Image (cartoon, rainbow, N blue to C red; front, side, top):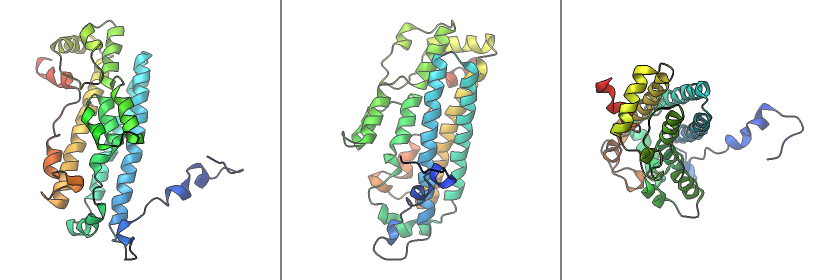
Length: 268
């Protein structure tokens, strides 16, 4: 990237380039663009920017766990949770768009769908929801495919957390620590027994567990609000990209990314 001799606000943020990226497809044939398409584009571009930041923070959290840096991990998790609240709040803005306003330009989306957001799939992979089939949506030579393939081969945040606990002296079975990183996180009664002991005996680490629960709950909240926004906007119509719309999204509701932390609540 070239730099001006004197750095300005606009050049530091690549502002001219950034503000040129909101291109309304409804005006592509010389027609007057639909008013609400600008909002639709900006909201989703902002989502992708926040997804990028969340990936940046989650990667950092894994690094700090490996370095046994609990204060920085807790601080990073606080930031992640704050960003998640912003993601949910942005849906309030999107819901100011009436169904007829969206339908006025919806056909322009053709096969484009939020399902194709590879950064959101990256986040799922980092959190331990590994779905190798997600790669099939992208050409093998694409950047999206390459990024997802790399994430698939990486240990998840949960795997990093369990290894952190093991280093701290908590009993984590070897077969859990060495499990295939390309598979989704599965509940483990042995891990749950250790987590119960942690909650009862370690007041320093229990808050970290609770922040992971907050993260899991925040992801579920975002999914729920997303589903209700889709229902509010298009009802039970087919979704873009050939999906079943709201019905497709509902299948992912209440899916815990850290199942062990939920399983122990009854026994605490």
